[in-house]
Image (cartoon, rainbow, N blue to C red):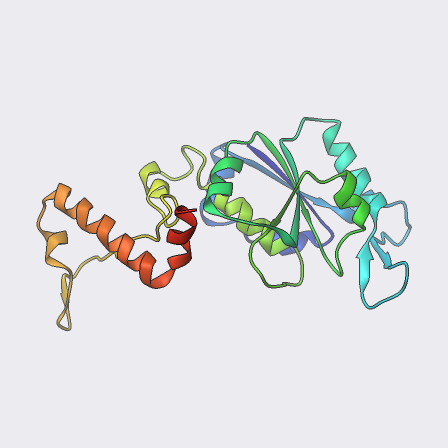
Length: 228
């Protein structure tokens, strides 16, 4: 997989892709992540990427020309499965969406900033808009890192124990069951006996029931959605 991220603040993305799983995934050749500075695609001598909105109003708007130049230059080199805009009013990002996008070969992620992008970018250049939640952050960079992490960890070989990703929360429409480790008795706080039994079939039954109960208590909307 290749992920090209377009941003006017590339330094915000240095840390997320240079440590832990995402760093190892790139070193092993499972994914290529390229960060593109939008300011490199403007003809303005001051490398400006934003301007005032027509009609007035507070805040600046990312201009269409440098975005179009950057996306067009990338599309001349390869075909992209999706050109994604990170936007607070996009489709809410879910595990199901992550599973689907993880099968992609090439993706572009455009990071919004200021008051957003010229609407013509969304109308003519973008194929999918994604939101990581119903709140607003300063820019799309952190959102792009979140989406990238969710996709990359699903690529075969990225996580040494591939079954781990398949048992994460939301993969089966439920939150994950409780987990414990040693010591089995700490300050009188004990691990459920079934997990120490060695009976794997009964352990799996317990885990499913526990996940179901936790979902009912913590995220009942997931069960309602599954019944739609």
